[in-house]
Image (cartoon, rainbow, N blue to C red):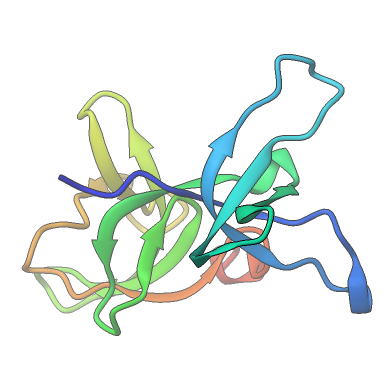
Length: 140
């Protein structure tokens, strides 16, 4: 069974940079409120076992259950590089494919318009960025 977790970019701006937070997601019922990510700590703290962080809604992405060739966890919105069957290097974005009901790599901005399944062992995916921090990587 795969672990269900999310990531989101924190709204805190200490040192003028938002940090990525990984953990459980709570979406507010009020649209004016931002989603929250709960980050668990390995040892219980005096007041609980983690913290809630407010995150930007557009940056929230779910863990796919897979890792890239370097062992990094693949999240929705990650930009990956891989070679297809003809050894063409492709760049795509991890997305949920509703029709196939599985995670896929959208390369529609590339030469072809199709979705590859990232759990297929034929493809060695490498994370090269994400759509929030590195949008220029998919505008090629």
